[in-house]
Structure formats: C-alpha cells, structure tokens
Length: 193
Image (cartoon, rainbow, N blue to C red; front, side, top):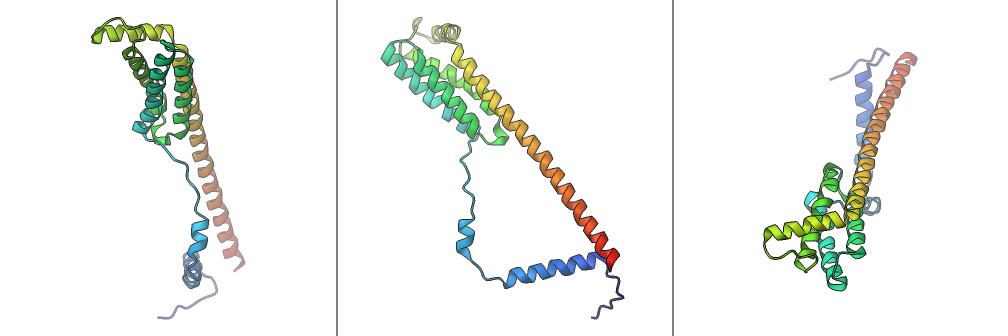
C-alpha cells in the first residue's frame, strides 16, 4: 500500500507518524532497571478510617490508664496524648477518608474516658448506667482536650480538603493550557506546510 503525499499532510496522520516515531525510540532504548528504581518516589504512609480509629484510640486509652494509675485522675497526660494522636491521624489519613479524621477523635476520647472510669477515676458504682454517668461527668469536667483535638483535626482536614480542590483546579487549568498550546502548534504547523 502506498500513500500519496500531496504536500498538505493531514493533522491526524502527522500526529500518528510522530507518535509512532516516539514509540520506535522507546523500543530501541536499552532497559535500565537501576535508573527506574532510583526514580521511585517514597510515598508517605496513609491511614484508612479504621486505621485512624486505631491511631487515635489506642494511645488515648493507654494514656488514660497510665494517667489514672499515676495520678488517680485524668490530667494532662491523657489530654496531651489525645491531642497529639488526633493531630497525627489527621495528617496521615487518606483524602478519601478525611471525614474520619473529624468523626473519630470524640469517639476515641470517650473510649479513653471509659478506660479511666474502669481504672477507678470518678467511679459512680458498678453497672453500665453508672459508667455512662461517670463518663458524662468526666466530659463535663475535662472538655478542653476534646474540643482542642477535634478542632485541630477538623482544621487540618479542611485545609487538606481545600488544598485537594485547589490542586484539582490547577491541574485542570494546566491540562487545558497544554491542549490549547498543542492545538496552536498544530495549526501553525499546518499553516507553514
């Protein structure tokens, strides 16, 4: 099959020729596995929603037990560990699960208070109702770490969400600009041929 060229090449055919030339160059290039492994980007670890719960709840419950054992009450150790764990989880959660970074800290805080009640802090007696009353009393007495940790996680999650939206808009604008530039170059190429 012969292709007759009348001097005015069609744009799709020229694009196909260029694409085929690039493919031939890639196929002819030697394989270099060392350079590929060096160029790999080190990804940071990400957490799913259950992972966020574990990262926040486990240290918080351990700190509550430690605080109850050392001081006989829930003091600064519990609050500090809770705020740090909520912050860390909010920085590591994957973008799909950003809402979990805001929902999980209050649940983990209550789990930590339950551990503290079980260790004898402000125990109102035995039974589920008395434990819930003790947790309610501790929530009324120690709300600052709960508010601080949750607000910090919410602010961080909101900032990451806004950054994700801005990055998506920037990428879309860049793709549009690149397509416009390619169309302009193709038009100029057709005009000069």
